[in-house]
Length: 116
Image (tube, rainbow, N blue to C red; front, side, top):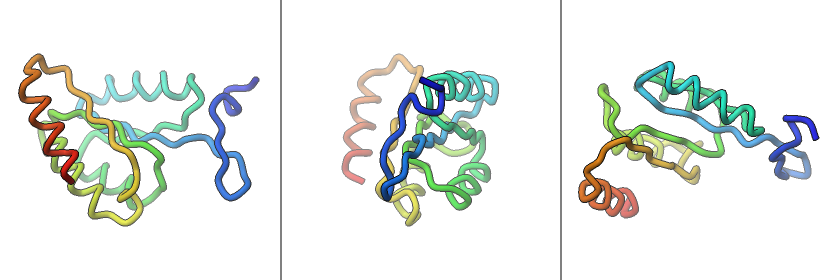
């Protein structure tokens, strides 16, 4: 099976490769994650700033958004709010990632995100 056939899914009768937007402030980390996703059969794109996120969301349809909770220029919660207001991403699942150790904050933040 070729890489492009790894995780196809049906969209209007056509096979499509899931598109994933990786939002991460560290470009090298984002590119490594995008490379792993690509090898797994996904079609990733990378955004490392608020402007890049807005450009990616406006320019293309995505099937999943992976976002670093602790973005320096804007927090992950702001991205969630932005994505929920934009018509092309209102139904797109968001997976918020964090390397932080403060689990109580993560649980509290998860509850806030679920309410959006």
